[in-house]
Image 1 (cartoon, helix red, strand yellow):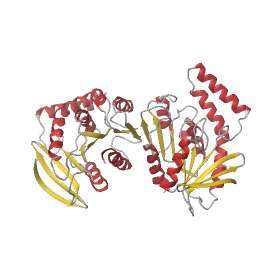
Image 2 (cartoon, one colour):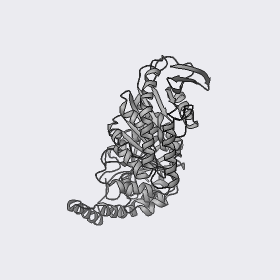
Image 3 (cartoon, rainbow over the protein chains, first blue to last red):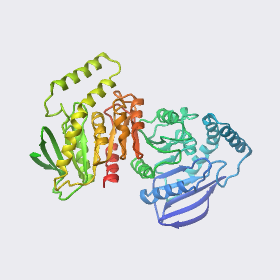
Image 4 (spheres, rainbow over the protein chains, first blue to last red):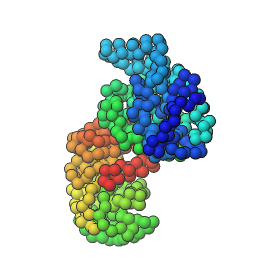
Length: 243
Length: 243
């Protein structure tokens, strides 16, 4: 794990790093010492580790909850090269969107393709970050919606160190089997008027989750319009389960 | 409005009262002076104004939020006489339950029948309670699930003094028209495995609500099994909208 830069502002220290081929960022409380719970955040499709929504949420989790937060560029996103295979999968997805009809199976195929690479990368990042004194080997949470759910749900299903997860904005397509293996507490965010995920498919993914402790939060609005108060609600959820 | 008794324990003052033919109870912070937001709580079918769930929730709203909370016995419930008409409606409902099949229309009919009496009673209680110095003419919230939603939703739709409502555990039957007239922020509680309200009917009631600001919270479990953490969540919802 190689650190590239460190800056601090408004109580938050931000460190850019690279682990193997994975560029990442770690946010911690400024001047923090000692172990603290860690939240891994997965960004949406076409976004990156420092997308505005990710940064804003990470800063709140750090300043209000005292968490460490880590995000990495998903394969083919942010500072990472786009491989030929990735370009082909994206082109197929775009062609499907232009042609109209049901995009869900193509989106699911792309997420399955990316998850095969992202899950082991995130596991390696988790191992490396937990060796830092300012993080330590405490409980881990995962936050990710849309593609952050499509890649994150298989990660949560596979990773016993994750103890609680906020997921959502994704349909059941391609994820039913992984969802059934998730047993940690889940907060599931659904947009009632989602223009990308049909309502019934989102509800079916919530239904498919194996967790005994899972809560669906549904709000009016389109795919990207999760209300701001859900960030505070996610923070309390993580504090309850990781604190 | 005639007060019958006053007791205080653990920071909460409880006053029993009668307004006309309506027996009620008012909870306020012990030693409180001056105006504060008011929450009206509607109990479930077969319950009463001092059912354990109502009391526990009211005490938290008072001690943690500083609210005044009022509950009354619904028509035919608690300390109130059962009229012949009420007995007939309940007998029809029970016969329907024994016979099996779809109970929802009969339940809706009973709630419509009771709401015709309960709504004006609650409006009169609101007027009387807001004349007390310890309550005042500030914002009002409503909390009620199951029958407390069946009677409460028409109340919220009719009553401009109510600024925010927690509703749920009820299907759309008999309530679609009133739901469309609700425009205040709503928190809607749904039990994913509700044995009394079919899931699709509960989702349809959330869908029918006219409010731009509405959030569905769905949790696993049967009709009466709302998790305890939803009480804290309701408290924060009321604090945000009435505080």
